[in-house]
Image 1 (cartoon, rainbow, N blue to C red):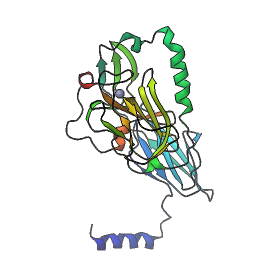
Image 2 (image 1 turned 90 degrees about the vertical axis):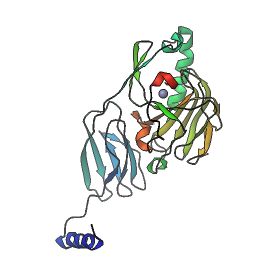
Image 3 (image 1 turned 60 degrees about the vertical axis):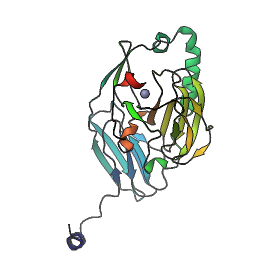
Image 4 (image 1 turned 60 degrees about the horizontal axis):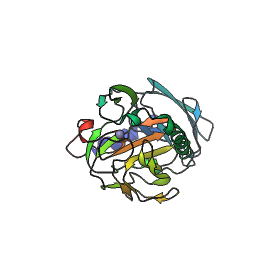
Length: 284
Ligand SMILES: [Zn+2]
């Protein structure tokens, strides 16, 4: 459209005296596994599917949609002047791969009884490191890939370990050599930095604000500490094969509150090679 035509249209809209446009704008596609940034009036309140979200003085909210989210979602924004905007969002469904991982040590698929106390302790540790109310909006900028490599496992695939159906794969796997650099995909605060977790091996949580948390697994080295502030691109450690992993790779997961988010939707496509079979180059 020519600049003249655009100006003409703007003029026409102003002339027609249309009501002010909605105060709330969503950035990003609403689909299973997606994280969407909501921008509305400063001081507004928001609720998604009946759950109140923490206040954002700037009117910027993160909302996310789990892998298994149903077909619709309801966003209610209460503006500072009392007006209420209600949006019924269509959550686009996605198709998921089937992935079979063989030759995993049986003790890691079905942990032995003597490991249960340790696993319970680690579950509690992880839950405590996932605050929902960090006020910063680091999630609202763009993300970068935390490691360079081939994608060896995609988000959402239904996993079978040694033929046994297990939880879906809630992350994206980037195959890379042990020792390859891992950087922060966006700014945040490190909430967890543990070198030896039962399932995850070397594990780091980065809190990007409002319950948006990056989870980095199987690391061979961790160069950050809990409580540390990181900027986008800061080194946080190195790729490894620790915990339940079939080869050296980074497992990058993301959550928004309880929802599992697909990190690959937030970053530009990975260089050339594309997705390959999981077990061949290391997964989980
Ligand atoms: Zn993985």
